[in-house]
Image 1 (cartoon, rainbow, N blue to C red):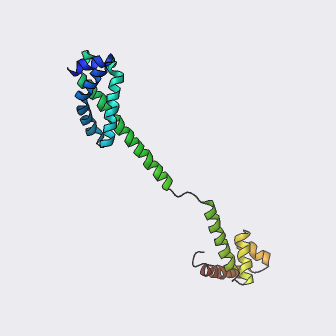
Image 2 (cartoon, rainbow, N blue to C red):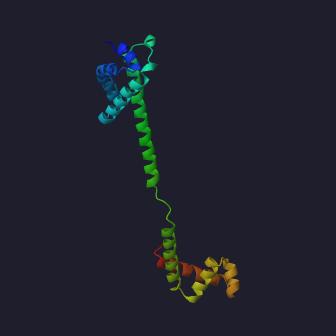
Length: 180
């Protein structure tokens, strides 16, 4: 019996006709799906889905528009292409998520610890300066005074304050390992 007749009978709920149709088209359906999908396990799944769809939607087949085999293979091809597109989209989503997860997240605790260690290093190095150097640098860098304001506040000549700060900053740089 031809696939056209069998598919019309399947549309009427004939299980025997479906068994015959299955035997007739399962090979070509799997072959087509396998060429599109390539993965054997997924190809088997898609072929099974197509054959199950034949049972459910056989009534949609119109013998006036073409042969049953052409209609079945069109259904198989569409389903196979859908599976490939779905797999690609899923792969792309996974790659995007992996890239997003791979980005180093801001770690506030680590940043605070690092800043604390840097502050401690600066304090330790400030303690190695002379009292006059430390006082001048503290007024300028921590309190925000200009060289002129530091000189006025300490009642010293501007040149003296600049010299103290230059020498003190040099010692700080040396103490901090060339970072400052």
